[in-house]
Image 1 (cartoon, rainbow, N blue to C red):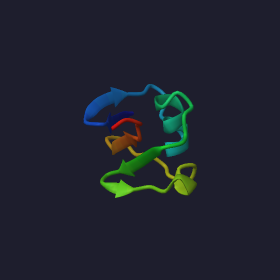
Image 2 (cartoon, one colour; image 1 turned 120 degrees about the vertical axis):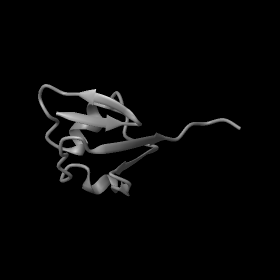
Image 3 (cartoon, rainbow, N blue to C red; image 1 turned 120 degrees about the horizontal axis):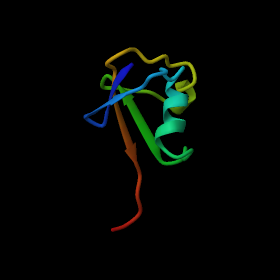
Image 4 (cartoon, rainbow, N blue to C red; image 1 turned 135 degrees about the vertical axis):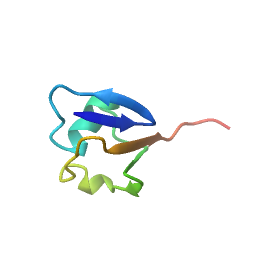
Length: 68
């Protein structure tokens, strides 16, 4: 499966079962302060587990950071 994550192609031999599984793999198990959009549609965290990814989906992951 090919996914485009933050504008970079990434290939998976075994496709993540859901957006929640992808986020677990991509964010080092961090879950707070993260916003995700799939194909330009924001996906609430409550829907990550039920969001099934398709080949060539575009995922944008935004992580909040501290600083000023």
